[in-house]
Amino acid sequence: MMSAYQKEFEQAKNNPEKFWEEQAKAIEWYKFPKTILQKDENGIDRWYADGQLNTCFLALDYHVINGRAEQTALIYDSPVTGKKQHYSYQQLTDQVARTAGMLADLGVVKGDRVIIYMPMIPEAVMAMLACARLGAIHSVVFGGFAANELAIRLEDAEPKVIMTASCGIEVQKIIPYMPMVNKAIMDSRWKPEKVIVLQREQCPAELNSNPGVEDRDLDWSLQLEKSMAHDCVPVNANDPLYVLYTSGTTGKPKGVVREHGGHAVSMKYSMSTIYNAKPGDVFWAASDVGWVVGHSYIVYAPLIHGCTTVLYEGKPVRTPDPAAFWRVCEEHHVNILFSAPTAFRAIKKEDPEGELIKQYPMPALRTIFMAGERLDPPTLKWVEQKTQRPVVDHWWQTETGWAISGNPLGLEKFPLKPGSSTKPTPGFDVQILDELGDQVPVNTQGIIVIKLPLPPGCLATVWRNHDRFQSGYLTQFPGYYVSGDGGYIDSDGYLFVMGRTDDVINVAGHRLSTGEMEEILSAHDDVAECAVIGAHDELKGQIPFGFVVLKDGHYSVDGNVEKELLQKMRDEIGAVASFRKVVIVNRLPKTRSGKVLRRTIKQVADGEQYVTPSTIDDPTSLTEIENVFNQNRQI
Image 1 (cartoon, rainbow, N blue to C red):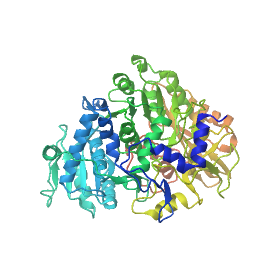
Image 2 (spheres, rainbow, N blue to C red; image 1 turned 180 degrees about the vertical axis):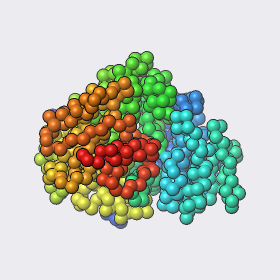
Image 3 (cartoon, helix red, strand yellow; image 1 turned 30 degrees about the horizontal axis):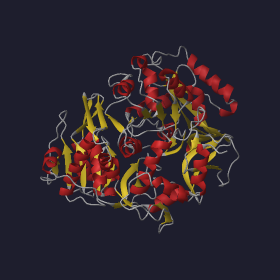
Image 4 (cartoon, rainbow, N blue to C red; image 1 turned 120 degrees about the vertical axis):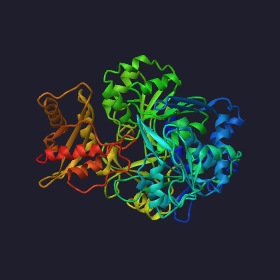
């Protein structure tokens, strides 16, 4: 007899049209689609092509109409400003409707683009939902991105309006936004008609300060006072909801296009199937609205599902201390917490024994989810032991918008396997291929692909560059979406994602996984986090080079930790790894969302020219890595 998961997985695999037609019934349509799946003029699978709906209606008005008007929709918690606010579904609907009216007053209509360049404040969420309400396409740019990155996105998206704030706050540092907005517009060939600026008391901005823009900048509050509430505009299911740019270290960012219909269905389905969330639950995705996690699980999915979502303007540490996450969970009765492993490693580094966790019982907290990078077993074990809560690793990408694999708690709970994101989500037919496109045996590493059609909610194109979508994801293995990650599926059907395919290094003809090496390093009791890259070597092609950050209060005496780590690598992988160098560093170069910049570290290691990634948290961290390599050139 098939399990609940297996039954649903097989239904989605064998008859995807029927399966996703049933899931579409879980949301309210203006016009329910008759055509569930069809190919467009480019041969790309499109979902619900003749359906009509509005995402903002699903996230707000629907709940007001159906009895949730007084339930809290959004909790804003800002330790960097000391502010906390609660918005009911009715209050948030009213604010969003007026924000939509403000945009409509400026001529924004369905199909227009609006760039949102804002910190983690309620108005950022309102701006996104207001665009959805009008059928305008929002493109959120992480608040504080450099002017040149904003300019690139301006040129590609060609927005009618920019919505921004006067400043952002990073721990105790005030970051004025208007100088960057002004420079980006000056440097871009595309000039938006208006810039709406929310003035924050920490650093008010001077508006219309640049020559020739005397009436371009508008005060958000003054404009909002004059606006009238605007109704939801029906849109077609295949109309774009948003464009979200993925940033690489080189090349032009890709604009991932998310469509209204498939996105709404997948968000609703994932909340039940992956997170086992119930309407009324408090859901906290500790991310930023500038990233895909913020789009999917701060804004859209929790609200579409009728949950309360938490918007947190702070860090896991230093705002004010490593107890910040636990304080939020306790105070706001969080049922489900979702963040990146890096956040928990930062907490573990400063509170290795978990003493601060004991101050917050968190009786409402049921489950902790992690994604965004590989969850190393030591971090998994630490969080489970210290919080006494189940931890679920799940894997997805900006391109998919929701989990490719995870532990489907809404269907059944599978036993945990450290290092695995458990099983493919129903709708994702995950397979492992070799470089020739042939399926590999069980437990054999290869390239992770997804057999087409992709389920609803995944990208169907790259904004204004469909050729890039085809060549980047669909060309290598016809009939499959290529994830860019490597891994394997074991005999129980569990998926193990071992890292980007370019994280597999070739040492004297032996293909070795840096992910596996990182697991070994991170298992050491003194290690808080680590990274392994393949550095160029004249003799062997590549050899591994390890970086280790120690837990606070832990030290290496006479190189004892480095010696132990080298011995562990030799014992567990063998001499074939040629792992002869590991260095202790104070920190690893990371993006603002917590991903270690391994590709850039590798470029430094190989002495290549590199571009400091726009997403980097602190550029000086790369200088520190350069100094390490300069001191260790003879590996």
